[in-house]
Every structure is written in C-alpha cells, then in structure tokens.
Amino acid sequence: MKKVSDSSVIMHELVLPNDTNILGNVLGGRVMHLIDICAAMSAYKHARSPVVTASIDHLNFLSPANKGDILILKSSVNYVSSTSMEIGVKVESENTLTGNIKHTASAHLTFVALDDEGKPKKISKIEPLSDIEHARYKSAMKRVETRKKELSK
Ligand SMILES: CC(C)(COP(=O)(O)OP(=O)(O)OC[C@H]1O[C@@H](n2cnc3c(N)ncnc32)[C@H](O)[C@@H]1OP(=O)(O)O)[C@@H](O)C(=O)NCCC(=O)NCCS
Image (tube, rainbow, N blue to C red; front, side, top):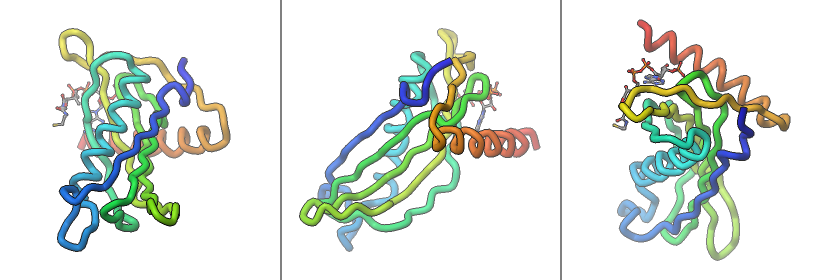
C-alpha cells in the first residue's frame, strides 16, 4: 500500500514564443505533452517500474495560457486497479507580472506498469488519506469501471 503523496509531482514550465499560436496562446498539443510527462512521473514514482500511457480521457481547455505565463502542473495517482493506475493532472497558468492564477485544464490518464518482458505487471494499491484523496479515489473507481466496460465492447 502506498500513499497518494508518494506520487505527487509539481512541474513548472515557462510559456515561450515557440509554444504559442499566432494569438500568443499556448498550443493545446504543447499542454497535452506536458500533461503526459507530468503524469508519467507520478506513475513512475508510484510503480517504480517502466510505465506506458494507455489512455487519456477527454481534455477541456478552460482558459488560455499566454506567452510569458508560468504553467503549473500538479499530478498524483487517484486510483490503482491491478496493473493500471489513474493519474489526475491539474494545469494552472500564472501571470508572471500580476501573480494571477487561472485553471487551464484538467485531465485523467491511465498508465500501465510493465515487467521486464514488457507485460502488464501488478502494482501496489494506494491508500487515500485526506477528504480530497478519498473523493478522487471514489470518482476514479467509477471512471475505471466505465473504461473497462468500453474496452470490453
Ligand atoms: C497499455 C497496454 C500495455 C495494455 O496491454 P494489454 O495487453 O492490452 O493488457 P491488458 O488487457 O491485460 O490490460 C492491462 C491493464 O491496462 C488497462 N488498459 C488497457 N488498455 C487501456 C486503455 N485504453 N485505457 C485504460 N486502461 C487500459 C486494463 O484495464 C488493465 O488494467 P488492470 O490490470 O489494472 O485491471 C498495451 O495496450 C500497450 O502497450 N499500448 C501501447 C502503449 C504506448 O505505447 N503508449 C505510448 C503512447 S503511443
């Protein structure tokens, strides 16, 4: 049994001109890349073995991050099934001049841990401790059931 905090990752990234569209807003694909990297680090910290991204749930961009903003990504394991784990990632953008922070996007990703032969491998469960960890655990458990039903169709 592992704690949620064992897999907690906070990542910062400055939005540079090359990451933006002609309006100066960060490209969605760039945010998706950073979400995948941040979630992968949480998965590694939990599983302590090779992991792969199995899926990412739908992704809504809630407010644009602009050139010069700091992207703040926070991730941790929400729920462990057997060989797979759901990771939640929240992305915020901080205006460097005002310090104002906006919610840019949130995502749920599934990572699968692999053994030496590249086959899915069982990993430790997580023990939610705080109210928010319990709430995330319960809602992730429902999403896992839904995903498994979709996969078996
Ligand atoms: C993900 C992968 C390892 C699953 O392998 P598999 O042989 O289908 O394994 P299984 O059917 O035994 O599934 C293993 C676990 O993954 C879960 N899973 C498989 N596909 C999934 C998907 N698309 N979304 C969510 N969970 C998924 C299963 O529910 C199962 O979970 P559990 O063991 O916790 O109950 C395999 O499909 C793969 O390697 N995909 C490519 C991953 C990759 O390269 N990602 C990088 C981006 S391209």
